[in-house]
Structure formats: C-alpha cells, structure tokens
Length: 70
Image (cartoon, rainbow, N blue to C red; front, side, top):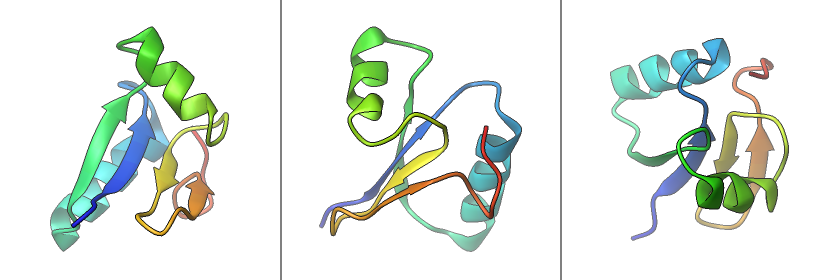
C-alpha cells in the first residue's frame, strides 16, 4: 500500500499544523523535508512550489494545509 507523501520544510507553520493534525488523527504519511537535500527539493518541485505539498497515492497533488501555505 502506498502512503501519502508530504513535502515539508523544517521550519514552516503550515507544515507544523499538518504534522500535528495528522499525527493526532493517526494519518500515515511519508514526510520528505525539502530543506535537507537538493534531491528532495528537486523531487518536490516536480509537484509544486509551495509547502506543504501533499501527493496522494492516486497521484492527486495538494499545496498547503487547510488553506495555509508555508
């Protein structure tokens, strides 16, 4: 089963809210912090340019969390 992939920054209020909310709800996801490697940043930029970038297993992409962008 594929997990949701979420591209984040280490310091990002919208990313922090996503981590807290999804953690509380028990939503499983793979977090990729784009500020920790160029490879991760390049991968994220294939999907969007504003974190958090959420990539669902069906290929759907969402930028931001609950209307907020990082």
